[in-house]
Image (cartoon, rainbow, N blue to C red; front, side, top):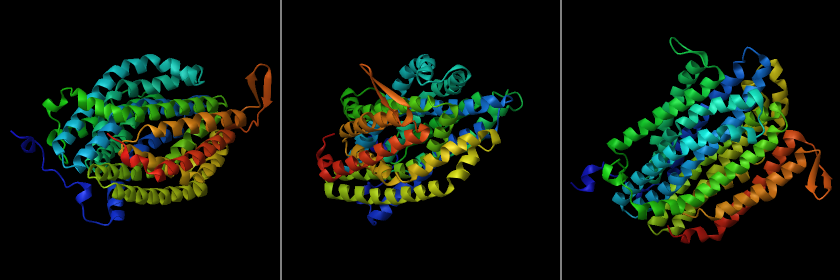
Length: 480
């Protein structure tokens, strides 16, 4: 039986679609935008559940929220390992679809899923073993540290499902399907609400686990989402289909996937490590600062996720146009996606600045949480002005990854974090800095606001550097 008989009829590639480019970008981006907001809704609901249901001992409330902030960072860092397969999968599937080689695109998708499974099985025990050490290294102590560990244990135990979920959705995006992801993650978001609530409060024979049940509900929801998207691929979608023969290791193809994905994963994971380092500086400021920081990051996610939708659209369009030998159209697609992403994220910035107090009161409504609101509102209003450069970072990262240019962004990330954000954060958050050899300089002691000023400076510089890389045009000639 031929390959064409074992897969569903393929959809036309994006380069053959006859519609205005702006509408094509929006058509690709809006399902991803829904997908990103559904992903965020899971985290926002977890944050709401923790903030609006205080424990019997109110003194533990802000401690639990601080633990959740650290847990969310660590969970994001581990799930970022999906870049090991998802970035290469998206880029190569898009290239092969653009070149009309559907069978090779399908083989890439199967190999990406096999890699996701292997990385998940190997990484799960390592992550669980290192978890207590990581939480302690980030500055959490006593009950707060133990809360973070317990919250994360079920998420890490089932992390293989998240890797498979993200890898499958990424390959479908490369094929031009940006709608299956929102469908699957919509189910995850809807399922997470009753599951997290049930694990938190208990229901019937299910005992209430309190704060720790939130992590269990989230982990189980993503496991169901993973099984759903794998079921879609068993049937076949956009020319991609799970096939036993294509899951068997194809080492030359694995090399091509990892050749793109490894630099992207180094970039993503190094950003994650720097973010954790940055978080340790915030945690050192106390539980109130850590809680306000975590809530502001969640709210800022509304802007980040908006940009990510246009980054995904740009990645698919750039990859398929380069595969079809149309570099001019690839660049034009990138410019349109960047324009839309910048406008959307700037509107989100207006939302942050205007409604910052209401957003914080939603997650911290009790009187004893007022210090969290007081610390958080100024930083959310500050980051509102960073939305345009952040849009350049996010969308142009998608452009470069779609082109297979995954090495240069690593340098830009290291410059932003190691040369700008972290040194400035030390200077602005400490009352003094010991540089060694008896050299001590005074710090500015601005607390959490100082840390976010450092973040603001980093985003401004990196945004300018990404625009420079894009306008150079060198990404058009990268071999994949």
